[in-house]
Amino acid sequence: MKKVISTDHAPKAIGPYSQAIVANGFAFLSGQIPLDPATNTMIEGDITAQTERVMQNVKGLLEACGSSLSQVVKTTVFIKDMGEFAKMNEVYSKYFSENAPARSTVEAARLPRDVRVEIDCIALVS
Image (cartoon, rainbow, N blue to C red; front, side):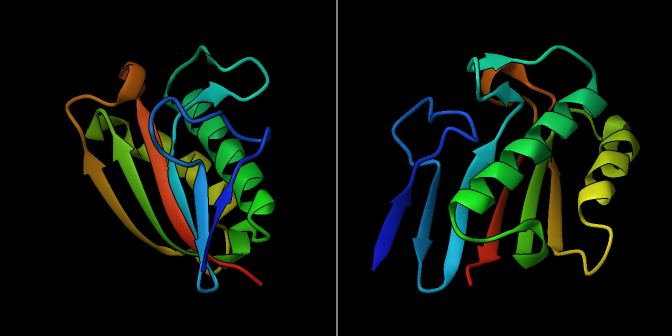
């Protein structure tokens, strides 16, 4: 059985997709970009600020799914410029300081709304 998750703790979907789906004990989160969920507007700032907002969105969405950052098993990071990897990773590592999930990082020529970073993930749901 699949359950569609919708929450005000992450940006509303900007297309024909769900914020997240919970199925068979897993939460599948759509890619999160640095939109402020309160205003649904892009936050200002560099890769550090954008990654911080993205991780806050991921955290809020995971909680709406009945999960948490500690339950994440896999992330995919899409980054506009691999030259900014270290700065993104510094913020990312604050959220996954112990037992980090598996991760893929991909440089993408262009991301939605021309953001610098987008992150999706899969997590266990308790």
